[in-house]
Length: 277
Image (cartoon, rainbow, N blue to C red; front, side, top):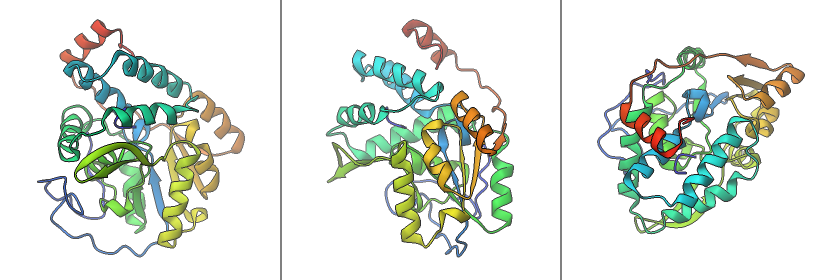
């Protein structure tokens, strides 16, 4: 699983994307942001109303580049995630990382960008933009915080209005050496690991989690939700909804993006038995 429509709502104008190499995704330099209040946003089922990994796996199936074992592993963990029972998915992530050992990172970035442009850039939840606008108006930082791999996180941050400096993108990280992936994992931002990676980022940036917001849909993110001062659950899975109700947390329904017809994906899903994608 590689990735662990909307208008961008960043503080800065959205620059053109020409290359995914380099320090940032645009040719404009981000101005320093002094606020120590940060709004962290999960990606899958929070910023967007779908799971980006599902779309990546669908593409890889169509291209014949994934093994049946990896397909069934993906199906199993997608189903578990939907029920809020994603504990142990780190092992699936390690298996996925190994599948890309030796692949050009530049080529992989391009493929990730193509999937987002074709399948995901229109899938921003309607309620997400106004939420980001609120934080922007208060001069608060907007940082993506996802278990997806770095290439998906970087491009999603660009598309959906989060900070785009790679140093300010919180994600899982596949190890890269000499322009190729090694098959190893440098950072896991899943489950409790997401809290640890986020806390490390906060310590580096002089940010206190007690001042921050975190928007998420998944019970797998519960530790980070417990640690921030302002937890907000968005269209939560059943376990997180129950937990949030018990804790008195804010629960939001941000709606779903307007569907875009995708006959090719539907045909593939029927053929492979993956219709729940």
